[in-house]
Each structure stands twice: as C-alpha cells, then as structure tokens.
Picture 1 (cartoon, rainbow, N blue to C red):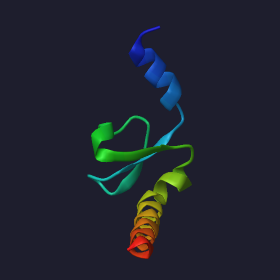
Picture 2 (picture 1 turned 135 degrees about the vertical axis):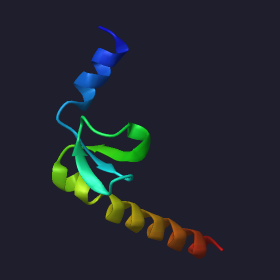
Picture 3 (picture 1 turned 90 degrees about the horizontal axis):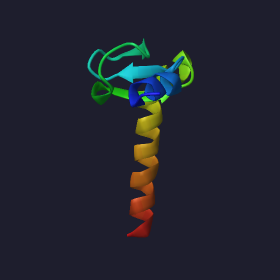
Length: 67
C-alpha cells in the first residue's frame, strides 16, 4: 500500500477546522497546512479554536507562576 493509501485510511471519517474559511470541513477540504485537526467528530472540530485558546491561556498562566 502506498503512503497516500495509508494516509487516506487514517483520515477517513475525520473532521478539520479550516483557518482560511473559519469553518468545519470533512476530510476532503482545504490543504492541511490551513487546517487544525483532525478531530473524530464535527463537534470537536467546531471547538478547535476555543480549545486552542484555553490551552494557550493555561500555558501563559503556568509560565507566570514559574516567574
């Protein structure tokens, strides 16, 4: 099996959040360089930006605690 075939099997049924269009996309969508994911559900992909913001805030707070 080719590498492309393996990638297709891994990503089948997964969802992405497109940073270019600011929307959830199925596997067939924009190039991965413009997307966050993959996520196993459409709902998880829809929360990608909030999850990233929450993690960034937690990391910033942890860095402040270390100072």
